Image (cartoon, rainbow, N blue to C red):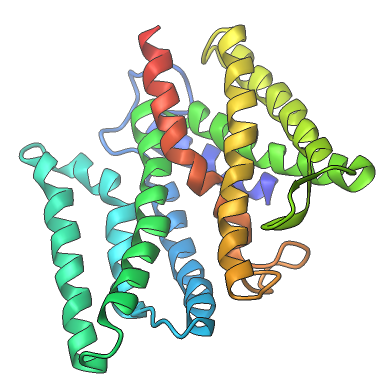
Length: 276
């Protein structure tokens, strides 16, 4: 999966001219392939979240929530085609999606569990759509290499946490939510994240050495918190994994949980670091 994602992102950068640091060949529209990848992940992710919600007797309105999440998640991409009034697009989009949810509730379920169902759908759109939009935002506003840095730091933190936690884990990190997570694993996550951050930050001239270390430490923690968020959803539904689509991992939600939670913080970090 790491190799596949890297190849897809490099192809994306080659197509829109952002593979090199020079901006002379950059196309006006960036991140087309990443946009397609995000759209393709929205569908199975919503199906998995719908199954978790169904266990709690909540209804996810898949036609509305999937389309709504895709529109919100890719809003950064479509705004590249709009030169005027772009600031009002997202509020209108959210408003119309909310009204569509209420209409779907009325047509299919009437007055039964209105707040619960519409609340669950709003959560699904925020969790999957809004958070995913920041991944595309990083790609469009900060370029290919910062996007790769962010994703690789977070996912290698997962790998470091799993490897060290499995081999040496003794002290539980969050026993109520995820009994398998340990402080030793967190140490492995930090070590892996810092190493990857330094490799990207220094070799690609993204940020200074001290900032890359801070980036690695911060996003090792934030990524693990994102994993715990999804673990809360699974534990509430008494499920070990969100699905069995990916052998050894579980479902799509089990793969994208940490980057989703970390994406808005990464965007903010890149904004602040660019000002220093």
